[in-house]
Image (cartoon, rainbow, N blue to C red; front, side, top):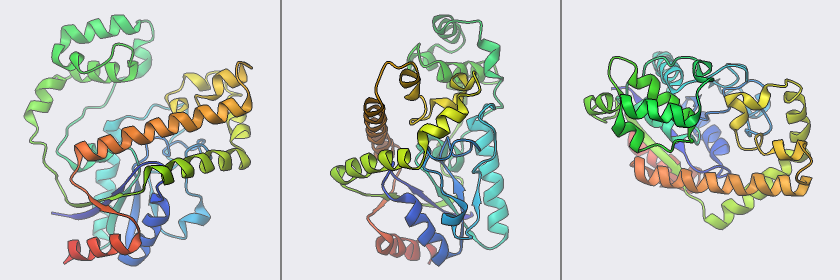
Length: 292
């Protein structure tokens, strides 16, 4: 069984800096586990690592598609597993890094997905109609979803229309890891994360976040793309309509980022068996023990 390392943690916890230190010392190549860093045009708002910051360490599955394209968990799982094989053949350790916990779990557990139909197949249906369709196809799956969570309802519908519906597919899986995996989670105090998030948002604006989103919004369809749902982008809609001020925009991004941070921590605690680490020294100790 291939050995891999995963590094997860809430936003603004220092995953990027820690991942670079780990990669240098333990001969790793980094695979992206952030749902929005796959998009080429989303840079500042996703806190994407620049080429200079990557410091010649190979990074995979960053900047691989346009914001105009849909990107599914099926695609990510397939690509990540291919990269794990490639990196292992080079006698390097795959290091999976990012804050999207569902992406990580989908890649390292025995989950099965099928290629999803295009989202625009459902454009003519309301949220309520889609939800009713799902209830008919897979009532148990519908009970776990809110009718207004359109993307997840569509995803469940696609699965329900495949050979096995969502409930049957999950029953078939053993929910076991398919790799020998060490999962490290960055442990920071809530107060420190709050400060880091506020500082990060203000730094993003200093680095040109507003200009980045203005450029993207030159495409009149941008805010209809899945990519635009990322925190740091969707909040611009009322700002561009002059319904809120610049300071209110910044505060909205900070609030939503903190809410996301809380959801990330809940997911990590409930979904994974992790080794909590505060810094590189603690991470190094865990990795050395894991690789023995």
